[in-house]
Length: 155
Image (cartoon, rainbow, N blue to C red; front, side):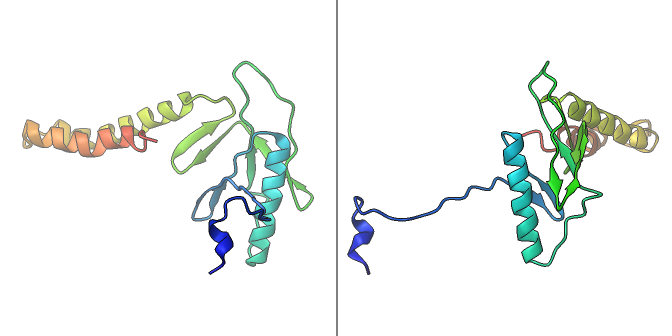
């Protein structure tokens, strides 16, 4: 073992590359602090994917730019292999709705809508059915409706 391992004053040459990523299956969300960060990270991901024999579908790939409340930013052209990505105002990522304004209003509205829909689908079969006890109805409400409303709220 090299004695220099414990020598904290020893100079070392290292390179540090930090890639922030949020990937799940074939979905990838790439955050960046500035337009240049987004473009650089997008190029890096595309290069890595190509090394593994994969190709980014530029027709399905979208760019979402979040800006501070009350500010309108100019369009930022993010490209992959000379193809400019479509800039959108909102995207759905893993069940959550992300918008160009950094608020969770649309996501909360969507979760309320989904919980309301779940309740409506179970209304006749469970909640208005006199054959079930109140305890059973509460259990169904908590396990189906409430879990739909609160899914991933801890993050």
